[in-house]
Amino acid sequence: MMQSRGHRSEATAVALTRDDRSVWRRCLLTLLAIALMFALATSHASATSEDENYRIVDDLAVYLGVLPAAMVRGHPTEHPEASMHDGAAGGVHQYHIVVALFDARNGARIEDAEVTATVSGLGGVGRKTIELRPMAIAETITYGNFVTLLGTDRYDIQLQISVPGREDPFQVAFEYQHTR
Figure 1 (cartoon, one colour):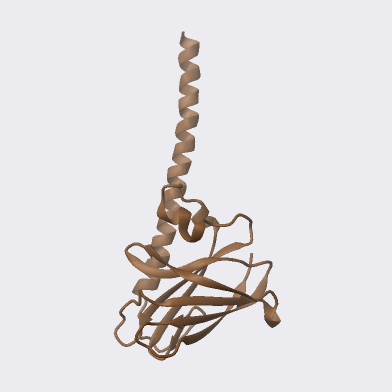
Figure 2 (cartoon, helix red, strand yellow):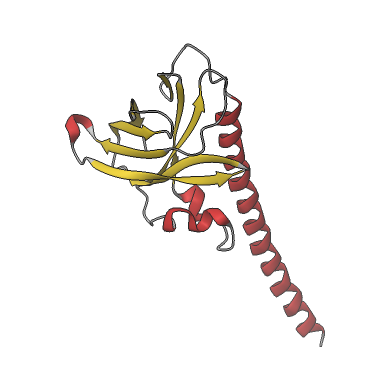
């Protein structure tokens, strides 16, 4: 009988360890997602300087993020991000492009745009256009989708953004230096 109890305790300890790892992973991924969204949301949209992940074009402030798709794959199946954009593709070269949009004049988030991204390697190699779909994280709307980025390379990411009430779509270009 004591042996049976000892066996049950060991099995319970293993299950708790797995549960602890799962909880820890979910907490870490959630914190990373919140940190990214917080960073995008709290950045001053009317700043005049631009860096490699921020542009202002015709009073539209655009923030770009490129994250490993594994951050999304780590969510439990019931979490809304687990099925985002029909789920993250497998593989080590899968990444998630995230774009946040603001009115640069007043800092208001733009939540009703249509966004596409054309991603290509150096010299236009492997050009692919993807729709960046709206996604709600931490009660804010950003736009994103998955893309394959092979190897260490410089990628050109061209965004086309249509905002209701504005006549012409906006074109915004970013260079992204990808390192594995």
